[in-house]
Image 1 (cartoon, helix red, strand yellow):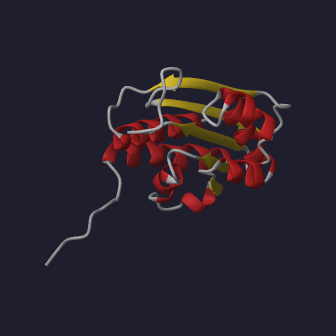
Image 2 (cartoon, helix red, strand yellow):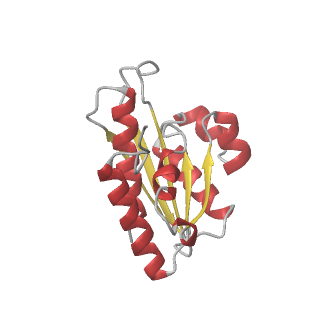
Length: 169
């Protein structure tokens, strides 16, 4: 007889997701996600928590450039000029998710998880994050991080943790 796991995700990620749900629910805030390299794992972490429906409005998994443009309204010229893994693209993803939802806070993540796809300028482990808050008049916090993980799974797990931290009030 096999036992079912308590969670699909590591305990530290679930604990952080529990904080996201608890603290945002306490403020009556809804969140929306725009994910690329994490492929929905941030939303998956949030939905591991009972009561997450009080907080999670929506999640857009926009892996391709075409999906970023069609679903989030990321301008083609941003992708052409800076690439999908850029602060400009993450900023546009966060803004697009906020505009296409009723959420109060949006977090976007796009990066190079590997093992392929990296370059000298944009190596594996380069991930960009953006956070937009409704009513902040287009002010979006965006940053580029070079994550320390060496594997695809490691990069994605670290990116999920950073994104969850950005969802905290």
